Length: 472
Ligand SMILES: *Cc1c(COP(=O)(O)O)cnc(C)c1O
Image 1 (cartoon, rainbow, N blue to C red):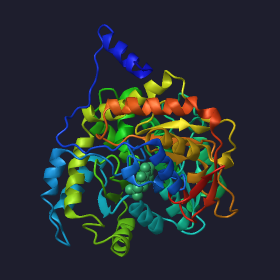
Image 2 (image 1 turned 45 degrees about the horizontal axis):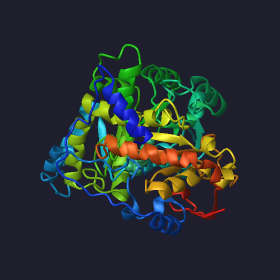
Image 3 (image 1 turned 60 degrees about the vertical axis):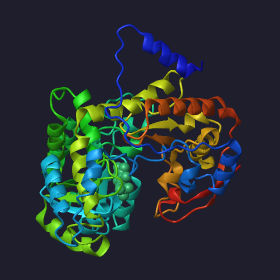
Image 4 (image 1 turned 180 degrees about the horizontal axis):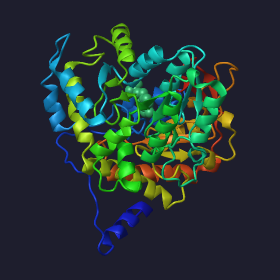
């Protein structure tokens, strides 16, 4: 019996142990395809050693992203049949609007095709060239739209977020001193809003505490600066608050989410994450003026303001997904499944970001490959190695994702070189997590043989999606 099998076997025998299981059963299956090592060698070379360029039929377990990869429930599929595909005033839009108002508390809603559509609208409406936007670490598309609208982005996350070994329970928190220093330096009138992400994807799915959100609100209110939430994983964030922050253990996820959102003036949302759907997003705001401008712009980029690039049926599925995401049994298993994978890796001392965040395990590629320079793309290399070992697809979150400084043209050099194993919602079982852990271990055991990559093609925008590499 292999090591993981043995561990689980013995754990099962521990007296008094009560296991948890996924709070759903399987009604329809999608077969998985396995490949040979030779097929994978061919496929990854064809893909320029970029997992984004692999064909999905060459992938066994797909942990590229949790974006739009969720399994919908039977209720959501039933909702798909209630699509009102009217061009204007779809009934599904009004149900979606009601669900967002009820659970996120914002007044005005603008649907978009996905999160970046909302980011584009917000950035165009709120940012003037020469502005500055502080945020708790960056997200790729979010920062792109802010910079594209003429702003300079400033990372004001706590230092612990950049330390893969720090066990800080809220590594997504904003550092109030860094934020104050920026306000003092550039002036409040040059800061249209603070971009507050919950949880922080690029820091490893790390949560931000309620106390911190409240404090950021108090600080920015003194300067008349608005706060826009990146609410993409705010329900997962609410779960961490319930679990870790004193005073919230007996508060429902619904109540935590509402309080959290009340410290912001609006939000951008990628429904492809928390909302358990395959496509969709929205922008929300309590600001009447910004709402009117964004509602006007949405018709240029997305579609009419009552569908914003989504089909009626997609809006219905999203409205139902919002309710389901707030079910605490679901959220416990969602976060629990990620943690289960982390626990398996932990017992083999495999280096990854701790504490385990909400949606993914972030392997520490610098610690895997201390012999590789950052310019040899350690995270990109690890993603390719993992695919070669077993057909598991992960993604780079390091120097390639960070891109270049658009003034100097140099690489941004993030402290973290991470390879992300992202867990889709309600798609895989614990058995799949066992297989993933064993493959990561095989890569770790083989780490000294690895020589890194050279970038041979670099697109101008969001290069990580389409860049190509060759073995060194
Ligand atoms: C995915 C994501 C976005 C962008 O949303 P899309 O739906 O992919 O356009 C923005 N912010 C965060 C934190 C995300 O994870």
